[in-house]
Length: 162
Figure (tube, rainbow, N blue to C red):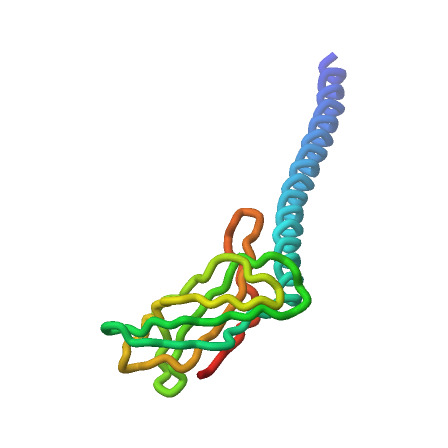
């Protein structure tokens, strides 16, 4: 009788071990699926923004800076070219002085779409450069807004010296 009980326990323990192995396998497959799924989704949004950036080019065509007080304020004329018709979120502008190597301490955000083949003039942008440093170059970077409304910068920057 004792041997029959021990024999049954051996059979039962084999079933329990098999079930535990199956459960561990299912849990590990679930964990791997979640990680891979998140990677694929994040990569897809990056590719989408990258493809939009290829078709759009916004550059400065004219810059006029006037000293007011300690800092210079500038009016920048932006022109959009390229084949892309997607609505852009706006542009980021950095003011520089190529001669002295000075760069504006802040990036100026000009939000809003610029239509294809249209120019837009912005007024009174604070260059964050002192009048003594002067401004002789701007760099314009286009950005798109993602699904969450966050600005996604394009990798290409358009410089303009004046």
